[in-house]
Each structure stands twice: as C-alpha cells, then as structure tokens.
Image (cartoon, rainbow, N blue to C red; front, side, top):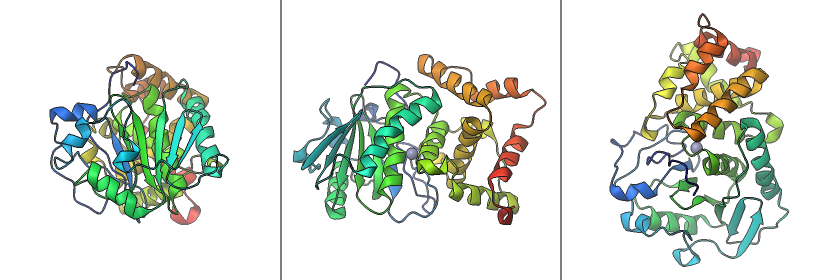
Amino acid sequence: MSALAKPTDAASIRGLQRQPPLPTPFLAPFMVLLGLVCCAVFGAAVGCAHLAVSPRWNQAALQQVTPAGWSAADGLPSRAEIVAGQLVIHADFPLAEQHRIVRELESLRTDVSQQLGLPISDEPVHLYLFENKDRYDTFAARQFPGFPMRRAFFVETDTTLSVFAVWQDRIAEDLRHETTHGYVHAVAPAIPLWLDEGVAEFFELPRSQQGVHAAHIAHLSGRLLEGTWRPDIDRMEALASAGELSQDHYAEAWCWTHWLLCTTPQRQRLLQDYLADVRRDVQAAPLSARLRYAEGSATDLSATLRAHLETLAPPDDQ
Ligand SMILES: [Zn+2]
C-alpha cells in the first residue's frame, strides 16, 4: 500500500438491509491489517447496507495476510491469470483476456480517475473469481468465518487490495462496484465512508446509464412520498461506522455523488478538490462546509438535492 493514512478498520457489507445490524464494531489489534470489506449479498434486491466487523472473524487467518496476499493453497482461483492495467485477475475457469467484463473493468480505471480527478495508481488490485459457488463459500467460510455469505467483497489490508467474487448473473455490477473501491482506495484510502459508497454505487452502473441509478431513484422517491426521508449531508458525514449504513444511506450517498458529478462543472471540481485535499490531509475541511460556501449560505442543500432527485425520477414516481 501507499504511505497514505489507512482508512477505517470497519468492514462493510452490501445487501443486508433486511438483517439486523451487528453490535458495535470489534476493534481488536489484528484488525489494523484490515481496511475495508464490501460485499454484495446473494439474491439482493435493491441497494445495500453495511455491517460492522464481526468478532467471529478468523483472527489467525487475518494475521497471516502477507504482502503476497492469499495463495492458491488457500483455495483461491489460480487456473487463469490476466493482467489488465492495474487489475490482476485470478480465475478458476478459462477467462478470455478480451472478455467484455475484463475490458470494462480496465476502462473503469480511467473513468474513475477522470471523473474524480484522482491520479492513476499502479498498485495492483487483485480480483479472485470463483466459478463455483460452493468453492467460493468454502473459501469465504474458512478465511472469514462468521462473515455472512455474499456474492462479492472487497478487502483492503496494509499491503493488498483484493476483491473476491463468485461468477453469477450480477457479476458485472458487483465487480464494477468492488473494483471502484479498489481504484479509489489505491490513491485515496481516507475517503469518507459515505462518499466511498456513493462513488461505488455511481460507478457500479453500466457506462451507458451515465450514473443514473434507477433503483436508488425509485427508493428515494418512495421515501419522499412517505415522508420518511430527508436529504441531510451532515448526517451522512457523521456516519462513522459501516454498521450504521442502511439502504437509505446507500441511496442518498449515490444521489449526492450524482448531483456533484453530473450537474455543473463547478460542483464536480469542488468534489475533485475535496478528494485531492483528503489525500493530503484526513482532517481536510468537510465537503458540507465547502458546499455551503460555494452554493451560498442561504441555499437549502436538502431542498436542492430533493429537486435534483425529482429531475431524475420518471413522472409516474413523482
Ligand atoms: Zn461498497
């Protein structure tokens, strides 16, 4: 890893909105090795949620993480290896170098860099792709016992960036999401939790959708109609633990990110400048303060985001 400050030692898991959160994160010394884990749940519907680190994780296995990462002896895929830019893809099935998903993930590196104004890193992001769900489950259960079974997850340690995934119908979406975490964490590991997920949700979409996340739009529009949700960037910035994240948070994180990236060049530049500052100083002035200054103190940011959402929602949803 780079010499930059490491992010939280929490783990985050996508797709758990129907499950109760675990207790307060368990921050044992061994967890300094573990940066972040983000997963897609099997059979998840819309959006995702986070879960705190489980004390039931295999501490011994985590302590054994080395600069070389895991190996085939641990049950990892090793039949095919493809290097695609920053990605080192390990698969346990024949995977063509020119596979659409491989090329798409490779070009995602440039998209993430350009849209967020982040430099390109050469730090490898390892993708371990399992063709067989049972083998994937066996590996995950052995390395991360107690960790809920998910379609994919991202793990950051002091020395490695790794994505583990099972090849299934939603693999492209899952890999775009998790690989985005890898690209971002290679250069900006201190990115705030909520923004980290907002960015990953933005880039998990096929390029043709230009960041317009129909599922999140429908979810937030429904919440607005119910009167059960109000955008609040201060609340997002206050999120300190992955265990606090709900589907509402994921959807709102995406919505702020889309508003920042897709409305005006000035807002995109503000986000880029913020990320550049966060790379240098984890205590950089928060995004909310910068937005209030840039938009004007009289601007109601919550109302602005609601108006943005309404421009994206189909008429039937308004
Ligand atoms: Zn994520």
